[in-house]
Amino acid sequence: MEYAEHLDAAHQDLDAICTAVAAGPLDTRVPTCPEFDVDDLARHVAAFCLRWTQVVRERREVPFATLDRDDPLPGPPQRAEWLAAIGHELVELLRATPPDTECWSWYAADQSAGFIARRVANELCMHLVDAQLARGEAGPIDAALAADGIDEIFFIREHHARFRQDPLVGTGRTMHLHGTDASADGPPAEWMVTLAPYGVRVTREHAKGDLAVRGAVGDLERLLYQRPTAEPVQMFGDETVLEEFYELFTF
Picture 1: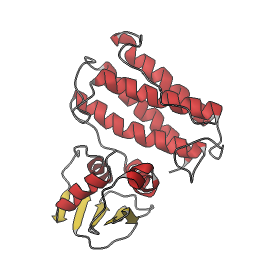
Picture 2: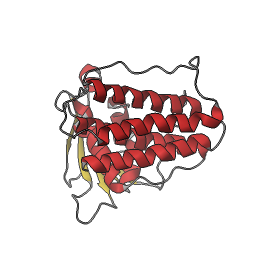
Picture 3: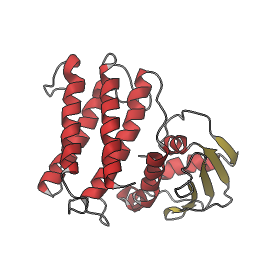
């Protein structure tokens, strides 16, 4: 996906998160984040956006903003508007910032505004699922955004400290993911995942794995993030491979 597409997706999903926040009581539990209610989720998304806004402005690392329950915030009727203002400020700041602008990120290989736009789009995408599930059902994820999110999981997060510090090691078993709704003019939505002794190794190819998972790309992303799928996915082979993946990667 291109920079502008990431920002368009972030803006759209932010608006949908705010709609979900405004749709009912703030103390409703979020089933996919058991430690959160909707108020906690709104605070978390706001803190995430505030941090990246400061990073883009100051071009340096800053700590994650803390928005504890003791912090004074607008009352429940205004909570969605408060969140929207914080998120839109970040999106508009990024729109005014060229994608190759040097900015701090936790991924050493990409210290750019482009990295931040991608991270924001994929973070808000998954938290939209969380917010909507707290209100009932979550809608489908756009296939292109979901494929980008899966690539981000594998091709960026495998270098993150989570994998370097985790003592768990893979057994060498493999998992093939096959997205059924990829765009005809885009790359095939297929990933071959090897749970290697040093972490997770991934290639974009069609191959036979110990486990094959087939479904809409958005549902594959939701499955990897341990969120319920919108539609059933098909699994063929050893389903314990997915459990091993969850042990090696928990976001």
